[in-house]
Image 1 (spheres, helix red, strand yellow):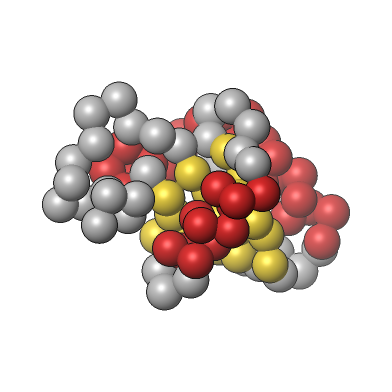
Image 2 (cartoon, rainbow, N blue to C red; image 1 turned 30 degrees about the horizontal axis):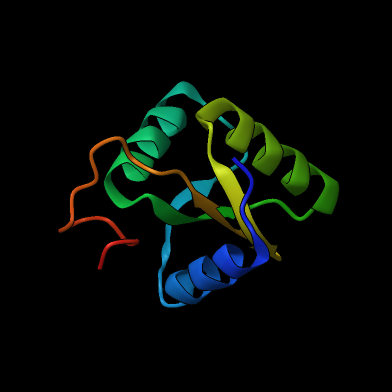
Length: 100
């Protein structure tokens, strides 16, 4: 599932006012973090993730691993913040950032 540039622009605009839901610390992608990520993606579909690492390559590696494990699509990265999107099978209109 590849996003077009128009879709990426739309998702970036939606995510502009969002706060990071998931914060990845020194322990990296733990099992608990992945469960919380799954819940957040199922509920909200479009989320911000903050990677608290000063190493640029390490941040990129963690974000790509996060996307591959969760099946999510990377919309954009700016510094330590990544915008990640995955469509839910049954989106909840009250929680979804895409259907508000």
